[in-house]
Every structure is written in C-alpha cells, then in structure tokens.
Length: 594
Image (tube, rainbow, N blue to C red; front, side, top):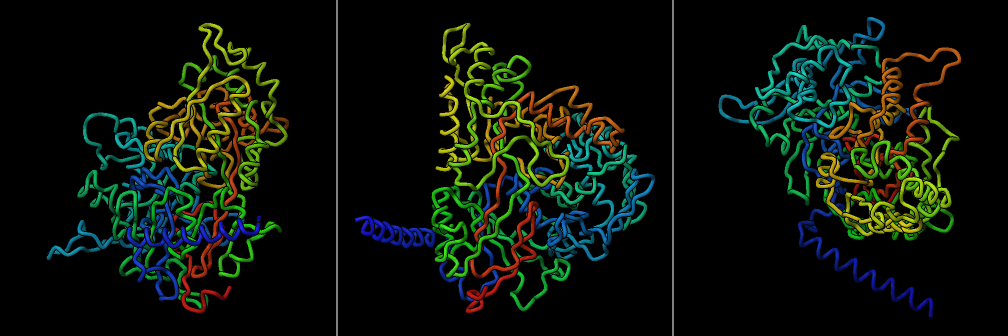
C-alpha cells in the first residue's frame, strides 16, 4: 500500500508540473525561449519584489542585485578570493592611502562609459554615451548624503568624510539641494582623480566603496528623469535594463559597446558569458520549485522546507535523481543573521521599561525546535555576529532558551502568566512579516506557539516586502522578523545595526539607543586599538546587546543554491550583487557534462 501511495503521489506531482508549465507558458514564459538545448545565452532566475534600482535606495538584496548589474562602484570583490578581498572596478587600481589613513586617492579608468541613454543624446536625438569622470563620483556620494532623499545607506559614509555631515545638514532645508556646493573631504583635481579625506582613519571604509549604495550615477540622468530615475538606469555596468514589468519580470541585456574582458567573462572552453538575464518575481516556493524542475529557471536560490527531502538524499548530499539531470548544489554558511526585532520606541516592548519583557520573549524562543523546523538549513544564533567573522563574541548567551526563567522574567515585567496586572487582560504582541508564503507562515506560527507557552498571544501581520520595509522604516511595527546579510566581512557591519545615529529609516531598525554602546562603537570606528589589559570594544558591544535584548537571535543562514545544467562557474558568495557577469552558459549536449 505504501508503494502505491508513492506512485500515486509522483503521478499527481507529474501532472501538476505539466499543468504549471502550461500556466507559466501562458504568463510569458514562451517555450521557444526556454533555456534548454536551444543555444540561448539567457539566464533565468527569481528576485524579490524590487521598488527601485536607484543605488541610494538599494537596501534590499533584490534591489542590490539589480544595481550591481547596471552600475559600477569604485571597487569590487574578487570573485574567487577567500578570505574576501577587494579589487578595482571603476578605479584603475587600488587607491593610494596617505596621511596615516586619512586620505584616499582613487584614479579612474579611462574606458568606463555611461549609457547609451537619451540623457546623452547626440545632435540627432539618438541615445549616446559619456565617459565616467571624477565629478560623477563626487555627485553620487553627495546624493547618498542628501537628507531629502533619506537614503537608508547614509550610514555608510556618515561621520566619515570631512564636510559631508555639514552637507547633509544643509540639505534638510526646503531649498533644492545644491550639488555644486564644495565638500571639504572630496576633491576632483582632474577628470580621473578623486581625493577623499576622512575625519578619522576607518578600517571599514574600503568595503563601502564596493557597496551598491556607492554605485556611480550620471547627474544628467537623475536631473532628466526626476522621480522616474528609480525605475530606469543610465549606468556603466555590464548589463542594461531592457524591460521591467512591475512585480513580474525584469530583463537585463549586455551593455552595448562594453568590452567583456572588463568583467572577466571572455569565452572559455566551459561556456560563454550570458547575453541576457531575466529576473522573475515568484513569491510562492512551490512555483519556484516546479519552474526550476521544468527548466524554466536556471537557478533556484531558495530550497523550501517542503522540498528539502526531494533535494537531499539520505547521505546528506544532493539526490542522485537531480544529480543525474546535471543539477548541482552550491552551498556555504552565509554571513547573515536573522532576528525578530523589537521596536524600541514601542511603549510595551521598548526602552528600559520593556527590558524584562524582551528578555522573557528571548528565553521563550526554542532554538532547537526552530532549527529542526528548518531541516538543518540554518544554524542557531547566539548573538548578532555570525560565525566566520573575526572578533565574534562566543560563549555568552545570558537569555537563551529557558522556559522557567522566561515565565519568571515575564512576571517580573508585570505580566504573570501573560496577564497584565494593571488591566487583567492577556498580553498581546504583534509581529510583522515581509512575506506571505507558506514557509514564512509556518515559521511565524511556530514563534507564536513559543510565546503561547508562557501566556503571550502574538498577532501575525503578513505584508509584501516593500510594504514591510515601509512599516518598519516608519517605526510602525512592534516586532518584525527580518535578516541582515553582511555588507562587508567585518563585525562592525553588524554592530552598526545598533548605533543610535543609524535608527530608522537607517539600518538600526529596532531604534536601539544606548550611550554606552555608542561610545564603544565610536571608539572602534576610528580604528583606536585597545590598550593592554582593556576589553575589545567590538566584543563589549556584543555583550551589551545580548544583555539589552533589542533582538531575539533567531538563526544564521546557510546559502543553498540549485544550479541547472546550463549554468557554470557559480561560486558561493556573500556579496552576490551583479555577479552573474562571471557566470557561463553552455548548451546542447555540453549541458549534461559536469
């Protein structure tokens, strides 16, 4: 009987796949362009909903991936090097550093061009190009600092470049921001040279020049398109945005006139560089899975819990069935931390008055059950900084899972057995989620069940991703489930999530504010080395955050990517912005050869 059920189940799944393929074909997945043995050099994968591809708003991974395709930064990550290291991108070489680390001098390449775009139109009105020059770098950094834009990436340069904070303050006024205003810390003596003067030496600043926030844009495009600039591009990156069907599909094609050698994607015996990249929005994990199995997607970057057994064999390796189809599993422990954040502005869970309640919630979170639900695709988080990052605090988890202590802390907070002593009503907290798929719902319901065990009722609110970001950025959420993927491989990138000057709409989404923490953060920021016998400020910051509990530490992520038989040279990377330029595409019989 068991065997009959398995056969029936497989038959039903097979029919479902065929039905889904038919549906997808009717939604724009034309069969003659499906990436199989037709020799197409198009790569298809999914992306979260993207609201803007303006670099200064690239706070979400999906938006950052798009920005990385169409724009360039001064520096970029070496695709192959581990530990991670930086190499030139728009810069012709790594910058020179002078004045004990306070002055950084970049020289730009002479073969970087924006466009083609109508903002550079020739005398006949045809879209043209323009070389990137040093004033473009200056302009782009000023946009990041423009208070009128309220960029969530302002924190990356705040307090770091001489005169930039003053520029930020002046831009608050009602008058149009004057981008011609001189900033003390940026000099452009010629079209190829950018001199950046820092307020203090900053060991982390070089990583910032490889972040999508600091991608270089042309002033002509911003001024011509105005608010529409966020929906189009006039970049210099390896790809151009060809079309964008909101919440459905984004199509990128290789930039006209760009030398492929710049992107290290010259033809090789193992495939050719992609000519086109299609990003599809598929919120449902089952839809993504079926689309991948049918060959309509080349990459499946999220393996759901429900599909885990279909992917992994009993030996913990990729199933023989998938392996036989030429599918490969690319995995690594990512530099990410997922957490449930408390809004520290909230009168119930925030501030000093909510400290015991936050600690009770943390102690009620059962990490073992959570990891089990996720089928081992994640690892337990004991703090904000993930494994693999230097100066990570270990062996300190004062409010880890302990149900008895959770109840004691809850009573101490004024809610014995979950009942408010002042009103006699049961305590109800609200949790915002940024997705509506089944996996998110199951996770949220498990968290709610943890709280139910100590008498707290949790109201779950499901949102699409853009709405979720807006609610959290406006401080409208009481609790929210989100993750942070490192911007650069340094513990300070996680510590800045608790710095008071980075509160919403910045990356400090919990709006945590603590003067002791800020003092430690600032001492670590300026590169001050700890004296003999003193504590490392980075470690002390982590200890303080663990004590104050602005977050429930949920888990650290593990990246598991399924790659179809046509795509090669896919290497795990924690900063995957625009890295498809390194990928290769093979076709025909070659696709089934590992």
